[in-house]
Image (cartoon, rainbow, N blue to C red; front, side, top):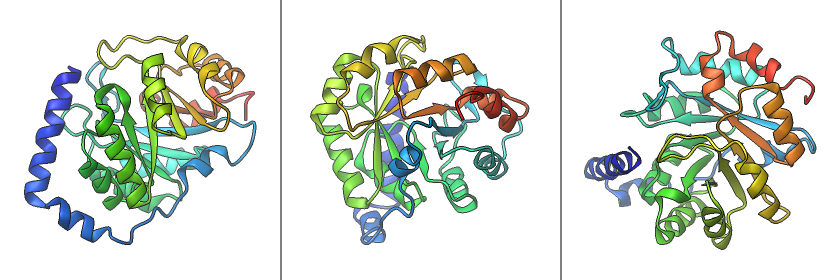
Length: 260
């Protein structure tokens, strides 16, 4: 499935470039910079876990998560419930997302917004900035080192930040070698969809001081939140648990009881 998704992304990038050439997109963003500081939002209150709340309609492994999916209403609800930032799935084919959802979240809230997608080309980084993203997710598992480097450089040039996602010690070594300051630890193996809830326990001690650590996937209970807090992560990226909830705001209160 992961190989299929990456191949689809490469086709999508080629199609997008045929419609808006890369040089034209670069010209439109020549003086661009992100309006909101994603990293600062996650570290604003020392000792307090930040929440990156995710707008995610469906997934290949779990199917439809939220039938009635209104990105503007959801974004406002998550902001009002205490989220520090938003993550927006923009993949359409597999996750039911859209780049317009990214723009909606940015325009109708005051929160920094992360484009979450399978980024395989610097073009998508510029595309993210064009649609209002303040940050972009880069997944080490799907990128050759030269691709990762090129995408990180693109983020710097266009004035947005990069959350670099890892799922193993090898991934972490690559991310640190390329100077990643924002590190996401994804407990879900993107190839098998299996969860490794102990992954953060193994990787966090290997991360140098000064890095912002985000735990991703598998956060379902208040006990999970408290465990991540004890490990010293800075933020949690939570999507599926919130999207399945009839009342996402109430679910946030339930998850963060005793930590906020």
